[in-house]
Structures are given as C-alpha cells and as structure tokens.
Length: 475
Image (cartoon, rainbow, N blue to C red; front, side):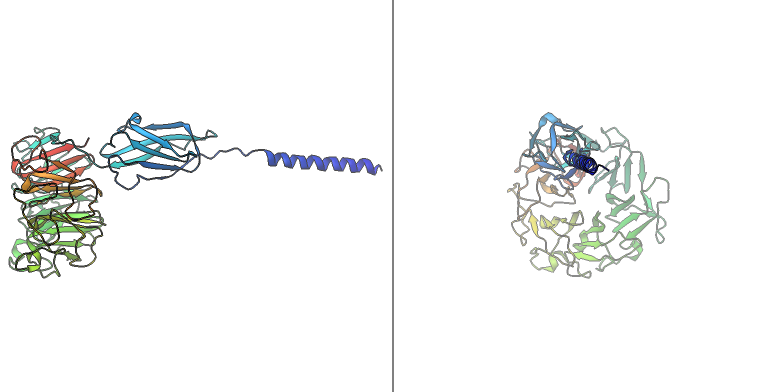
C-alpha cells in the first residue's frame, strides 16, 4: 500500500475540512431582527406644550428610512434630532403640541433593511392651551330644547355622550352626542332611582354626574345623599341603585355622624376610591372601594379629626384656617395618588401630593392664599394668585390644574403641578386679564362659573347664572 499517497490524501482532506470551517467562521451572519422601540418618554404622562419627547430604539436605525405621520401633528412642524449612533430620537414641536390626546405613527428600518414590525404608535397627551380671552366654541344655553337651568357642578362626557345635571329641575339630561349648538335637544331624562328603602326615590337637586366602570354616581344636594346606580340609568326603567347618607325620614338635622351627609356637593372616583365633598359637614369622606351596599360607612375623613366632628375649620373661634381644616369643601379631584379640594369658604384650594391614609392629614400646598392660616377675600386686589369662593369646579389632567374662581367670574389654569404656596396661574378663561372680574354676558365671559370637566381637548365650564355650558377647544 502506498502510505505516502494515503497520508497526502488524508492531509488534503483535513485541510479542506479545516478550510471549510474557517469559511463558515468568516461568513457574516445575516441580520433578520427588526428594530424595536425600547422606551418613549411621553408614555403615561402629560407633556408641557413645547416639551421634547425621546424615543429609544433597540439598535442603530437607518435615519433615511424614518417615516412619521399623525392626524393632528404635521411632521413639518416638528424638529427631529438623532443621537450620534442613531439609537435615540428627540422630537420637539416648533410651536406647541396639540392639546389633549394625539398619536404619532413611526416607521423605521435598520441598516440591514429590517423594518419595525408595524408602525409604532406613540401616545401623546399634552397640556391644553387657549388664546387670550378666547371665546367658547360651543355654547349650550337654557331653552325649551335642552332645559338647561343653573347647571351646578362638573358635568360629564363619557363615550361621546353628554350628561347634564339640573338642580332646579331635579333631572339628569342625556345627549347621545355632544351638542354643536344651542338648538340641539336632549335625548332622554332621568328623574328617579330605586333602592330597597326608597322604591320611589327622586333626584332632589342632582349635581356633578360621574361615570365609573359603567355605573353612574350622582350627588343630591338637597336630598343629602349620593346615589350610585347599578348601571348607566335609562329613561323609563326602574334604575336600581344604592345610596350613601340618610334618607329624609331618617335624618337628624342637628346630628353629626359617620353615616350622615350634609349638602354634599360632589362625588368622584380617584383611582379605586370614592371621594365625597360633604360640604355642610366641612369634610371630605373617602371610601377605599366603591360601596356596594346602602349606608356603607367611609374609611377616611379629611378636614376633621374624626367622624363625629363637623365644625368649620376644626371649630376655631376665630375661624382661622389650618393645613388640615376645611370650610364648605365643594369640589374634589383625584387620580388615586394626588388629591385636590376646593375649600370654598376659605377662598382657597388645597393640594395633597400623596393621597392621605390617615384622618385629618395636612395638605402640602395651598393655592389662593399666602399660607395655610389665611382665608382672605381679595376684594379689589385680584391677581393670578388669588381666589374668591372657588365653588365645585376643580379638575386636572395630572399636570395642569383647572379651578373655577366663582366669585371672580373666571377659570384659572396652572400649566404645571404647583410646588409652592400661593403659586400664580398661567392662563385665565372668562376675563381679558388676571385683574378683571367683569360680568357682561358674552361668548368669552362667565357669571358664577361652578363646574369644569375636560373631555380630551375640550374644557366644559358650567356657567351657572347665565344657565349655560361653555365648551372651549384647545389650540
């Protein structure tokens, strides 16, 4: 056998195999992984009007392949700035973001041509912005068509349907679509509710309808109850409900207790908590969950040391206010984390940066007054910092704060969450400037505004003494 020839063949085969392995090692892997959005700074937060948002990608992308589209935002109105390695994009509006909710659709590929799986949707929620002395875009006035009379409190738009509470007519009016003019007629009316002990309960001065998880919550000012319907009420149906507070035949007008309400002004949900402005008892009551039985007792009281105390400003003889006292609280807002209370007769608004967990917890910030002990009425000294009987209307998107400064006939707007007492507002609706309180009847003025609600990019103001709703659309 020719061993030399055999060795040569084996050696050549080994070298060929080795060369094949090296070729495999030197062959670049084909990139088939599409880029992904790792983070976007606008998620779950409200943007200032000109704030920059940052989008981080999982890898370097091909800038030339980048496409951006939006129904509300013109790409030509945005400034784009890429990081040096093309993994981060900063987007800034040339002017401002459109107020309310909008979306930006993003399409991009990497250097290998792999395109993001589908157009990424960036959610944008920006502060609302209004022109100086802006006129209402829609005015819903009292007439035979809509029966709007003295609309106290925050009204409500949910799923495109407008609900208006009329205290004087003891009725809730429903519009299946948001009216576009004063001639639009309501579609249905609710005047009653049914409970085990009130089979023929009627809405005795309803205020501030609120919808939560397909249930409606209504405050009855004169009835001194909060009605929680099992579902959204329907005209002509029995509309079963439970109630908080004592019915007429069980009330003791002079007794303060855990179960009694006195002229409640507003009930809302803050996260999972039910919050009631129990104005006549000078306190705010909190249920940690939405009650499921009539007469269920609250878990927390704000503004009083316990559930058996109901005096204004903790019963101070000189009625000096404190950081944990209230005097006719009429409006509340919360997202379950923060809390705002309109403390009407103290001419101020109190803010808790963290929702209280104990009775009688002190507020962190006061608006409308220089400190927590003042309750001054600034007659003839109106400014962007002062409030005069802010009644019921308080609302926030989590960053901006809207307050109806009722006796100054205006709505004040803070563009960012205040961090100090007596902070100045940034915008005003209803007046030409921060030092006026005119009462003339025009499309850009109010007389005793006492309710405010935000539906996406529209602010709805209850203009009580002109018996109308004013709808202002953000720029």
